[in-house]
Image 1 (cartoon, one colour):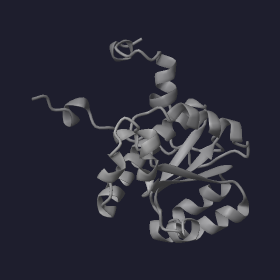
Image 2 (cartoon, one colour):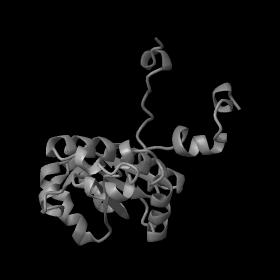
Image 3 (cartoon, helix red, strand yellow):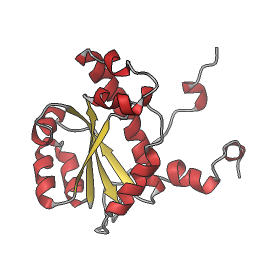
Image 4 (cartoon, helix red, strand yellow):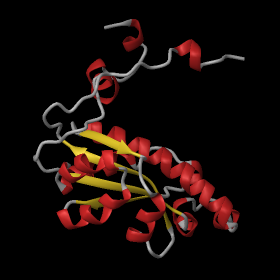
Length: 201
């Protein structure tokens, strides 16, 4: 065990599963991702924090070929084949009407909903906090022993029109989920060092 590993409460195997050995998959096997697995992932990551417990993330799961065909035209060409192959595709979106749930999710502050009366401020908060939740969701997928391939090379407005015509959802990212297939990995890319990122004042 390295010094860095020993400084963390999480055991080294879990550290590797979630971070060091986890990779973004570009091919997937045909092994299905079950509803039970997705439920377990969500039931884990729902406990991660958002501002004022907003919880604005909404997830649409695409399993059928027909559902994927609705999505594919809105993805960059390089993302289409792997999305068509993946056993499960998730559209992760922000609910811009999240404030309607605040009386239940943030009950100790009766006026919480009114703070977000301005639509622009509400959308900004929805997108930021749903993006945080998307990151938690990806770690949850890894915790389930699955690979995830997040993609932002997409036409968000087109996806919104196709899947969220009511206008109360804003697409953030699309993710392919499953067991890795044949030759799933690109070469590992470098990361910035601690001293390049962290400043202490």
